[in-house]
Image (tube, rainbow, N blue to C red):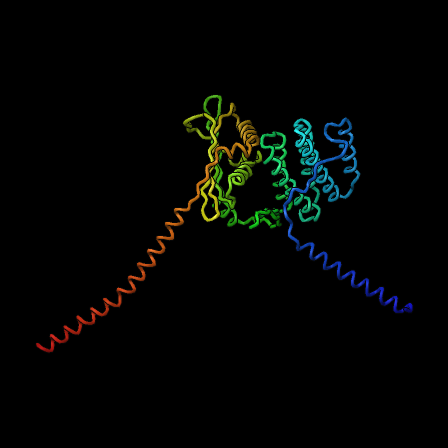
Length: 372
């Protein structure tokens, strides 16, 4: 092959490679993102129990400090928080709760740093949007850990901070990373732009109602939390997790919802009640949580409520959750529809007979007139 032929072949390969690259990028962007637990356990030498663990964290911070691009720095912070989860997973597997607690504390610190670092980044920056997706994925992994370690306080607190972090990213980007359950029971994520119009706010109130009331009695306050919402979950475990998610409130959320009244509650005894009525794969959930606090100052009451809700576990909710399936009501509705259909058919059959009788009566009256 001469030089001219080689040049043409080379140009053809370059064009072909460029086209394939475009197709590949398009396919990747259209690919469905599944939520999976993709954080592997940490198998390195410098875990939370190692004497050099603090030095490792210091080197990570130095690496972040010398990263001048704000978006890239944010990505490193999110990556390091992911590493803390991996370390905690290893310690939980070994039943080393103290070391796991240490990793979760470092995780919460990194979450706080991440929240502070987004202030100087535009909300539509690709780096911040990618970080928001990673946070949702981390949250999913933490939920799976809660299912297997429901009584681990450090894990619960880490999960709460993750929820707060997600809320702050949503406010910044004006986007929500929505989790959707497929018919196969898997979870996928998709990005939706949050609407701010009043109509959407009114619609959201129809499906979710949350009230927090505090009654001051002497040196104590009696708290009553009422929650109602609809969910597609239909099993005890998934409904309990949905309830837990709904009650994972920030201090600002609690402050905006809290109403202090002078009414007298019947009892200061702590109680947690939850029930779900399932019909047509929709669960209508009702929750009532009562407890007393040795506080009367509003700020202290908010902090006390936050502490109680943060300590609440999925296992506690599952223990009190009652599920009722409304199959009989569906059957009654079908029977009513069938009866209405039969009645309508009967009315249609009777009508011609009445018309015939009316015609015969008219003919009899005409005959009588003729005879007269």
